[in-house]
Image (cartoon, rainbow over all chains, first blue to last red):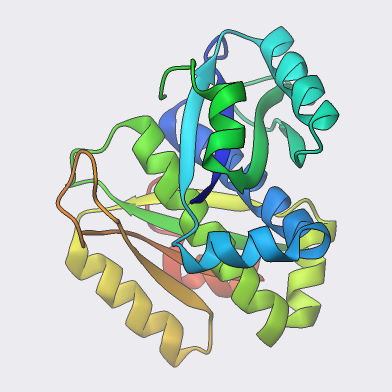
Length: 116
Length: 116
């Protein structure tokens, strides 16, 4: 099975609609990259129902740490920065999209984090 | 300006992570259709930062009503049904993705709804 993981900062004051829009931004961005760079995984992900897991991280440093680990492992990532008209400062990093990629590969990296 | 609107049912007991995953599912699905059927609007949406607005609706009937109005107006929609392993019953309709399309066109249809 193949999934996408989106990790959201829990140290920001975002309402659920704001969080949903940020996570959706990450998902669309990762999907579009995956479609070009990782066709086989992408079509598996789509045909399996485009599974997404939304987890929470303490703050910005964990977003950067996940980004580094994934890049080193050749996994697609997209760090999302909010346009910031409401709730938080413009340019704030809100979440990171990871994958889609194989469950086992992503579980080693993100498996210890809690669901949002 | 061009945007996507995602309308979420507020009558379901979904946590914020669950809502985010459903909204992301709608956004990815609408983006993929738009990319094929509505190339100009899609590339405008991307280049403008893929704006998304997440609104709430009372329940299933409003999802169907929005779907009908949008279909009649030639606007892309995707009704999202949850795979349902957690929180809600499998097969439950959770949200609808609308667009991307011109602000003015969507505002006439969804402008009266409140943000989630």
